[in-house]
Length: 286
Image (cartoon, rainbow, N blue to C red):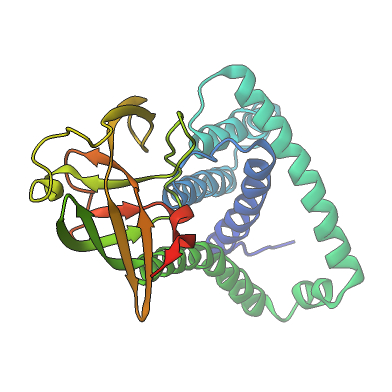
């Protein structure tokens, strides 16, 4: 009996299956939660591609037998887990392989039901539609590749629009002087004063040079903070007379606001020089 094997279809089938199983495994283990979404996606792609490539190598070079089966079932699966999660501890790797096989069994049961109890099985098993089946798997592989990437791109674009939407014009008053600048209302800013529980805004310290000569009468003190990618530290905080926030036709006035003095510029942002704590958005309207 003669069979024709399309190596590209074999790769696509295994790539799609491996990606789905790896996604389930990662969802259970949560081993890449701290990884950026784009990096996490690339690692899943790489792990799934490595697994699919190994299957193609086994078929092309006819690597059959007990030894090759063992390599396929254990080291090859471990390789995919390592690539996806970037882990080196043997116990964690074995746990990942075990969860991966559990996910494969669950997914295999789903495919079994889909194949035998729906039209899907009939469509892919007809002897006269080999090219049609190949096209399905090519489309499936393309979907697996581009759908998560499009989701990440959409999330980043949406986040960009959201940032623009929450950039406001503000005025800061102190000692009879005032300055105007742009500020971001950042929902991720959770900085509070541990001594009184008040929310703390953040401002580039050089912005206050025009209205503050020294820190006398400003309630200067230090509060602990932690920023992404930095160690825990202390940041100076002062109390100013008034913060006025303009949002279109609406004006909000916050008396005696706290500001943390940030020595530098916000990474990658020239649009705003201050960050308003979201809790202050409910301040007194002027």
